[in-house]
Image 1 (tube, rainbow over the protein chains, first blue to last red):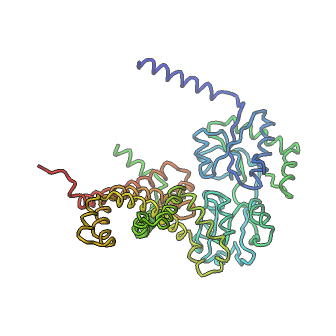
Image 2 (cartoon, chains in turn cyan, purple; image 1 turned 135 degrees about the horizontal axis):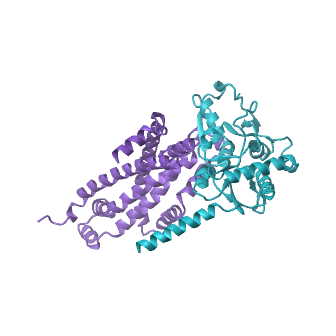
Length: 254
Length: 240
C-alpha cells in the first residue's frame, strides 16, 4: 500500500513538473472589476475597458489564449500565489513591498493620483492643515492608501474600503470629505457619473509609484519575458495608442 | 518547537507595537459593538417574545413578520441596506440626526441589534411555549392574573430553558460582528484586513485575529458554563 502511494506521489510530482514546463497556451489574467475606465462591465455584462482591450491585444501579440478572471482587490496577490490565475492585469502599481511577493513586467501605463471632494470643499491636498478633522477615503492596500496614511493620518480620519465603488458611494452619501483615488478612475466614477455638478478635483494631482505593470509568480520569468516583449511591440506599432485614444484624451503611456 | 516560535517572533516585522495596538483597538471595538447589540437586543426581545406568544392575531403576526424578515435575510445584506440606505433618505443630511448616523457605528449597531433581537425573540418564544401546562394551571388555580403568571412562573423557567440556545446566539453574534469591517469599522477583522493589506501577509494577519476571537469565545463559553451551573442546578445528576 505504502509503495503504491509513494509511486503515485512520484507520478503526481513528475506530471506536475511536466505541466510547469509547458508553453503558455492559456494565460489566466485576474482583474478587479469595476475600476472604470480600466475595467468595468458593459451593459450586456461583458468585461470592457482600457486594460481589457490592452490585455487582449497583448495576448494576441503573444499568440496565447487569455481568460479573464474577476477577483476582488484585497485577495488578488494571494490568489495569484495560490495559482487561481497566472498573472494580474489590474492596474497594479509597481512598488517595493509587492515586488517581494510577485514579479513585475515593465510598466505599461502610469496615471496620476487625484483628490476629489464636494464642490464647496476648500481642501488643499498639499496643506494637511486644511484636512483637519475631515474624513479621507482610500481603497485599502493601494498606493493612495499609503499616501493618505503618511500625509493625513495625523490630522484626519482615514477610512479604508475594500472596493472602489463603496468608496464612491460613501462620498455621494456624504460620509467622506476627501477621496484619494487614481485620477482617471475618479474622473470617470465621481465627476462624470454625476454630470459634473456636485464634485470637483481638489488641487493638483500627484504622481505616485513607478507605474502599473503585469504581476506574475516569481518563478514564471518566461511569462513576464513574453509580456515585456509583447507590450514593447504594441507600444511601438500603434495598437497601444489606438486603445489609449478610445478611453482617454491624453496619453497614459509609460 | 519552542525555539521555532522564538525565532519566528525575533524575525517578525509585522507584529510591531503599532500593529498590536491596532488589534487592541479592534478588540475594544468588537467587544463594545457586540456587548451593546446583545444588551439592547435582549431588552427588545423579551417583550417581543411575549407578544409573539399572544393570542391576538395582529400582535402575534406583526412580531412574526419582523423575526421572519431579519432571520430570513443575511446580516451582511441588512447592514448594507441600513448603512447605505440611511444616507439617501431625503433631507437626512440636513437633519440633526446626520452627525450620528454619518458614523458607521450607529447604522451598524442598529443592524446588529435588530438581527440579534429577531433571533433572541424566537429563542424565548420557544422557551415560553414549552412551559409545562401543569405549571400554568397551578398558577391559575392560585388565582394569579395572566401578567403575574408570566412574571412569576413562565418567564423565570423560560429563561432557564433558553439559556443554552441563547449562549449560542451570543457566540454567533460575536462572529457575525466581523462583517462590520466592510463598512469601514476597524474591529478585530478590520485591523486584520489593514495589517494584511500593508504587509501582504494574509496568514499571519488573519491567524492572529482568529486567536483573539478564540480567546473571546473561550471567555464566553466559560461564563455561560458557570451561569448554567447556577441556573440548571436542579438538572444536574446526583453526585452519589
